[in-house]
Length: 341
Image 1: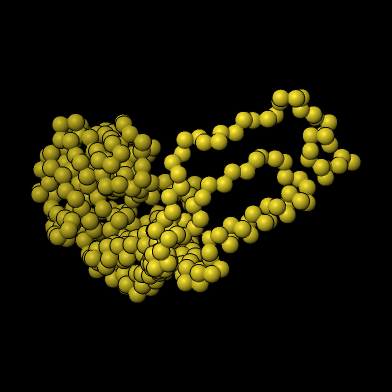
Image 2: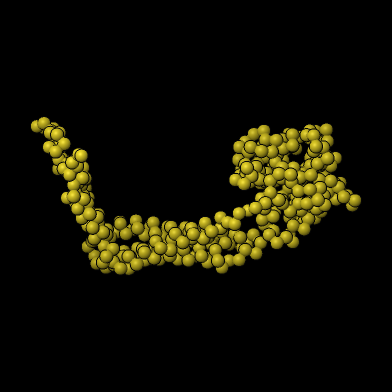
């Protein structure tokens, strides 16, 4: 068995020739002379810097508390205002929590930790003496940081470091429960009238002229228990073309009404709103990543990163002339997801 207890050239059988292995060290590489910092000369400045570092760590603690306030105390009552307020609170809390620790540590190093340069020859660390030297270096670093004799910095740093990871625990909790069939179903069902977004006014077939486009939601959606979640899945674009321009596939001839067709507004790439309609080319455009869908070819993708056509909503007209859905979408709307298979 090989003996690794010695790392000298003699023990490895390698001996340097005279004049080899010796590097001429620069006595003066041209660096400016060391200038003591204000905290090194003035005890009051040192105390002031210590308080500043502690304040930054306290900012991190306050940021974590702000995250918990937004997460637990701001109720989501299905309005955009409270959703925006919660997002703002969670974002600012996380930012202050991370920024306080980062800036605090940098300020600590710049103002209070030793700033003299130390160089050490590189060598193989194998012997017990080398390991002992390494441990001594670590202990010296801890001592030089002053964390043992600066309880204010030490305690605020420990508090910030202990609290900062906690928001991640609650965020991971929100990964469940499993969605079940929620992503495969929307608010649309047979007989549901198509209504203008956001007024909720039902639309007659006679209101839709050739070349026009409507942003549509199901009638009565505003009364649902989870309005925002349901609207995110159910938004639809309604358009009217010359019936001769459409090329429905077998089995989908009756999914429209006299050239009026309805397609999901949610891009199949990453879920952005497909809100732009070109009347001349009959193309639907996603302004976020430029996916383009051909309305005459059942919204087939002709350009961009999307990989699937927009799902079509089967529609008809009721006895009063209002446009209605004849069923839900026949496939999940929006981008692909793991459970889609």
